[in-house]
Length: 331
Ligand SMILES: NC(=O)c1ccc[n+]([C@@H]2O[C@H](COP(=O)([O-])OP(=O)(O)OC[C@H]3O[C@@H](n4cnc5c(N)ncnc54)[C@H](OP(=O)(O)O)[C@@H]3O)[C@@H](O)[C@H]2O)c1
Image 1 (cartoon, helix red, strand yellow):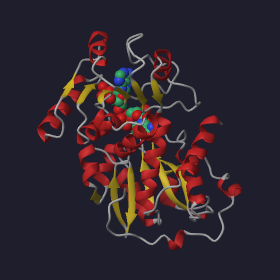
Image 2 (cartoon, helix red, strand yellow):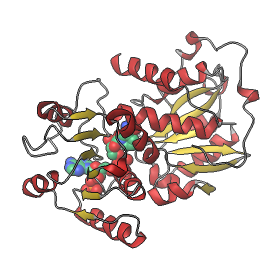
Image 3 (cartoon, rainbow, N blue to C red):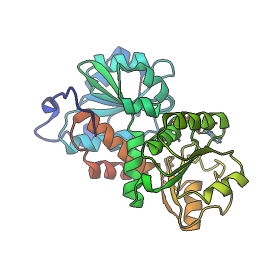
């Protein structure tokens, strides 16, 4: 749930009737930093007006607009969510421009989540602990930074598997990246009974282990090397297997786990999803083992709902978002 504090009224966003779908469909795939700086048509004249954005590089593939625009329509909010491609090193400049153009909020994706942490005016304590910002809310001209990936992960696990993270021993592949790290810290904060961290660059996982032990937030945390023997060993001690690497989006990506190493009792959470709606390698391995599995679309939905709550201080219309996302992934 959003922090309490300055709560802008949403009255000025709310329309008597929902905005037209045909106008929304005319938006280009993405805008650029130059478009944001110039603030000329079509960006400045969109109807409903552009008030929310996702930034990244690349960004044209993002399904966030297809998820958030139905939510805005469902709530009768006179605002539109767009993609803006921002190059590395320009996040702070982009944030100032968004605030100056009257934007309500911004989502941040690869590769900007660390840069965004440094570029906000007010950093939520949980985002500081998780080490990345993926949600920015503009309040009275000030940029407030949050992380909805960690809390979105908790909601996703509960919805998909019907269990709570404190009851699970968790193995995270890719624990050195922004998403994997956020999930690892969130699991530690939830005091999961065992946390096993694996990363291609082992020093990053080892350094996170030291950090978590020093903070005293988890009792049993270890880093293990990424090789078949080590993975087979730690999979025996894990209930939930999480992929936080960027592998799995492309059909040519290599498998993450040794062959036939998953069991039916495992729950498998792939933070990645394929833009063509097909199953990732990890998903196929889970299905073969008879294990319960979700891909990153579930996390995209729940982290998006939490962003919406930060922006508008009301519950997100989850089913409108889910339907929009499902349609985007099937198209
Ligand atoms: N569904 C959602 O809503 C959602 C939310 C957040 C993130 N994600 C997804 O999660 C993934 C990671 O995002 P991120 O922000 O954490 O990215 P990131 O900071 O760039 O981290 C990438 C991670 O993948 C690892 N990696 C990259 N290439 C690898 C390879 N060839 N073999 C083994 N490991 C490799 C990296 O290991 P090194 O440390 O060794 O480089 C690192 O741990 C992305 O696919 C992103 O789309 C999804």
